[in-house]
Every structure is written in structure tokens, then in C-alpha cells.
Image (tube, rainbow, N blue to C red; front, top):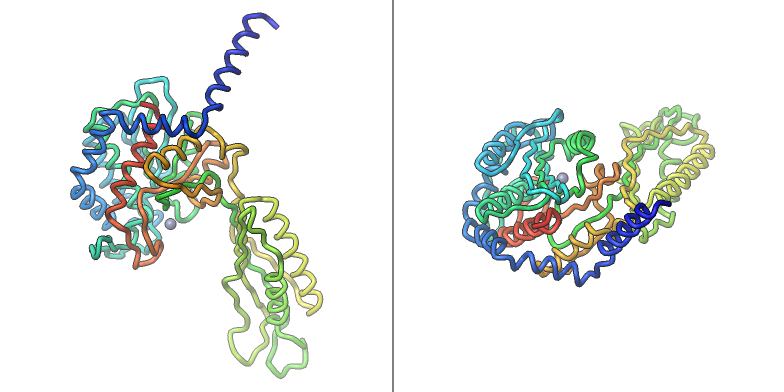
Length: 412
Ligand SMILES: [Zn+2]
């Protein structure tokens, strides 16, 4: 090996070692140093001085309903707000995601912050937010409008304090998170090789996730000839193997580590009291942070179903409603990105829960090998319900946390 190559290899190895050998305390010191930078203090002051305006903007965006596939009106409103800031490009991609870039001075990583535009509510729903006892009540106020507003507020704060980052900050307001991840999948497909870190803001406040839980949904049918209650054949309604199978499936051991869940939430037999069911079905929602656990439980469930179908002499039919594998990057928990995110949370005074159980836009990114986490800017309740509401006061701290995360990752 040429001497020069050997040397540069060694240098590379050493610099890698330096990057990855930082202790949690060193990461924390760096996060605190950023917090103490006078410009960052000025940015935080901006957030404090603009509390009322931030609250009003948050409510205004919330009141534009944006069901999945109908995000454009809300996107247009946000596009106008982005237009007032120092952003290099504001555009839409093929899926309808709204993308804005805050160019860095150079030499830093490209850091993407994502907040989803869409809500789960039906088109035409009139939304009027109300404030009661320190909380904003409105469908969609938390999921995910609090995080849209958090991004807008940080963009304002960065401009007001004249902060420049080394790396580019990319803000993407994504479509169709609630349905099939169309928006994030398009964005990752177009930009995969240019992204160093991807942060999906969705839910969360005190902690964050660094992997996505795998989720498989099935509908299992037992199909028999049915018939009147008094009919002699077949002897049983297809509801009998259904009941036996459900009881056996709930006897399966579902591990807690790796974190896993099994739920049978829906079932159906005959349409009337006086008929044997000819098609009795039930659903299974199977989740785990380990794809091996999902595969193992899937096999055990299939064996139970086949046995009970044979025993009752009915046919088995399994429909796969949807599958989404666990999104895990080996070693990610101890990567620089996750260590920085942990330090940022600690510097903000949180003792963060850090889990591999995310279920949001971070998963499609992780599945494509893009280092990703998900977190959020404030505590809320009743997401996906008309009674959804969020605490107001913690949002301001949450915005400062997102700002610190932007600066710690994109580098001051
Ligand atoms: Zn949601």
C-alpha cells in the first residue's frame, strides 16, 4: 500500500474515532455551549417576545382543515408565511410537499426537518379553536399543527437573531402522512443521497424515537356454507373456529422486549341472529420493533388458524390489509445523531425517553437508510379525535428545543 494512502487511511480512522469517541458529557457540553451563544439567546428572546403571535399563527393554521390528499389550501397559507423569511427556495415537489431551504455557509451536514400538513378529519369539517384553562382545543391542533408552527417559529427566530448554520436546514411540510406516507416517500426518493439527518416532528415532547415499530394488519376469514340455525349441515357456524382461534392466539407469548403488541380489534359473523355465519372474520394488529418477532408470531398465528379451520371443516382465507416492517438502522442508538439529540433534550432539562417505537415519517426514511429520529414540540391529548387539545405554555420550550436541535445538527 502506498505510504500516502496508508497515512490518509490512518487520518480518516483517527478522525472517525474522534467523532464517535465523544462521551455523552461532551455532547451535553456542546449543546450547552450553543445555548449560551449570544445569538442563540437572542433567538430564544425572539420566541419569548412573540408568544402571542406564535399562538395566533398556530391557531390560524389549525383552522384550515387539511385531510390527507387535501392539504393544498393549508400549504398555500404556509408558503405565504415562509415567503417573509430568508429562505433560498420555496417550492412544491411532485407529491405536493412544500419544501423550503435555509442555505448554510458550507461544510456542514444537510439536516431535514419534517412536519406533516395532513389531518385525519373529513373534508369540509369547520374547525374553530377555543382556548380553555391554558389549552388550545381543536381537531388537528397537535397532530401535527403544533410542529408546523414550531418550525415556522424557529425560522423566524433564526432570522431575527441573524444566525447562520454551516449545513443547510431543509424544512419539508409533507402530505399524506396519515394514510400511506406518500409525501415522505417522494421526498426521500428525490433526495435520499443528499440528506445527512432527517427529523420527523410528530407527537413527542420530552423524548424521541430513533427507530420505527413494524406494523402488520390482517383480516382472517373462516368460510363455510352457513345456513339456518336449524339446518343440519354444516354442524357449526364459522364463528366457532373464529372463537377458538382468537382464544388460542391470545395465549401466545408476546414479548415486551423487544417491544411488541398483538390486538384483535374487529370481528364479524353472520348478519342475523338466526343464521350460521358463512364468513366469520377478525382482524389482527401485530406490532414489534423486531421483524423476527413479527415473522415468528405470524407463523404461530397461521398454524392456529389452519388447525381450527381443519377442525371445523371450513376454509381459511387471510387478507393482508397492510404491512410496514420495523425500521431499524443497526448501531443508530449510539450514532452521533442520536447522541446529539439526547444531549439537546438534556440541555433543555428533559430526562428523555428514547425508544425504538416510532410510527411516523421517520420510518420510511430509516427504511431507506437515512439516519432519522422523531420528536415533537409540545404535549397534546386526544390526537385523531375531535376533542384534540394541547397545552400552550410548554410549546414555547418545545420550540426552543427544536431550535437547539437544528443548530446542534446543522452546526453553528
Ligand atoms: Zn396522526
